[in-house]
Picture (cartoon, rainbow, N blue to C red):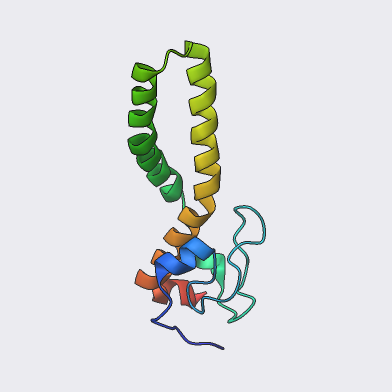
Length: 122
């Protein structure tokens, strides 16, 4: 079984959605379904739980990024209100769906990095 490699960055493993220990095995079996074990090193993922953290982080980050842009567009472009609702809903939904997997993987990698004894206990 592969031991912990301190060279595997939580950010790198998170962005690529790979195992936080070896950096090679896939973390997910579905869109957000975490695999039971790493296919490469055998790390048991049953002890990891990201909870609602990634979604909450994305709410804050996307709110910080999208709201100023939406306000700027609203002041400089004369769109009807219904068009703003459609455009910004699609933008936020698309960004959220695109960023949720890596955000969840990053939280799992951080949990492994800082609570490794609890994760490897299982």
